[in-house]
Image (cartoon, rainbow, N blue to C red; front, side):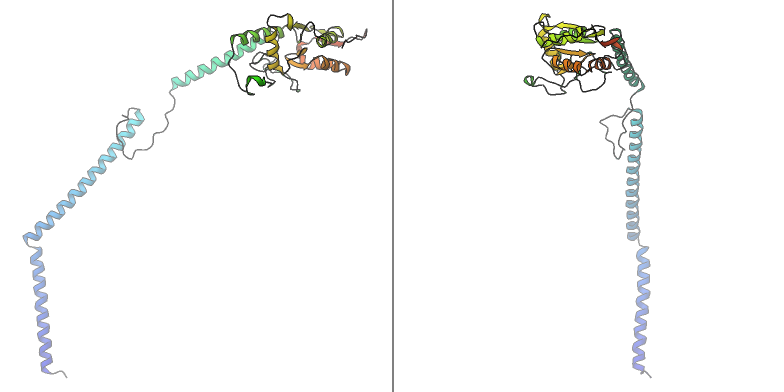
Length: 300
């Protein structure tokens, strides 16, 4: 059993603890109700409310500015110098309807020009939708012909090495080139078969003898003596660019070179010339047959 001295000590300690608790509770309550405490708390609350209000106002301004910028973009009235924050990227504007009409008009003119060119070629005896997309002599190839490996006028791909012109590279056409092209086209329209020759050339004489004396061809082959033509040298150069062949004779059927005198002689010896004329000449050749009444002598 504890002694009375210990009981007194415990009692004294408990009393002191109780008084301390009572004092602290009263002091905290009096502090919270004091004027200084009340003003301090009110000031802190006011600053907090002001900060929240300022933040809300700033967010509202940003949202309003973004909405105004988006509306201006849609109306295509936005000032390019106006700073816009957090605005979405502009979408590419579609062409106005008037611009589409202009494009359609240009395309229609282009198509009309092509149709007119095709009609003009048809008048000159070049048949087929793709025949003569551009006339021969170098600017564009003759279309509508079988691709049998024979050089095509205007599309043989042969270039003069000395000119430095690369294959597939277009060169600006001079007045002389244009004049030569027109003359060459005019010659090619005179018959489906053109023999570019020189009056003194024995190989040209061989080709002319075979085609003119050994065969019945309607329309008859047309002979152009380049040494007697005022543009002969330029025509020969144009044929080299177009067919890859500079030497004469140069025999063309419907704008395609079949070679020279030896080539014609070989086709004749192998009885292939009639089929070749009909195949390349197409509807422009009305008749093609080899004469058998008498043998014809071919000079070397």
